[in-house]
Length: 67
Ligand SMILES: [Zn+2]
Image 1 (tube, rainbow, N blue to C red):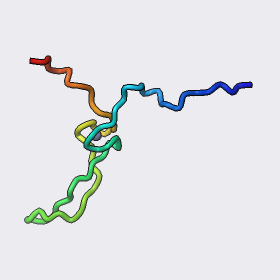
Image 2: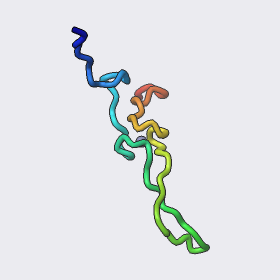
Image 3: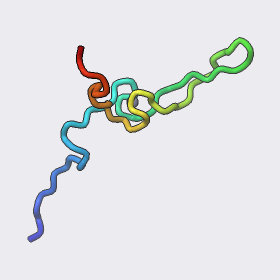
Image 4: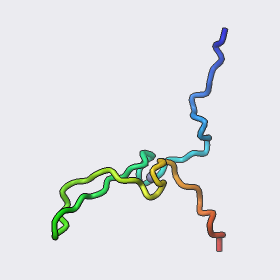
């Protein structure tokens, strides 16, 4: 008994799409610059501005109606 199958998909919804720039991680590599020459010494993880760290692709632009 009690062998009811549960769906493996999370409850976030089937329409959730991964964010492109961060590939769904919510983080993107940000170059670290130092010195006056702004020499790049490496990269660190920064919040993805495409999805604001959620890793999910933002919904289509709903703020402005199509032309
Ligand atoms: Zn993202």
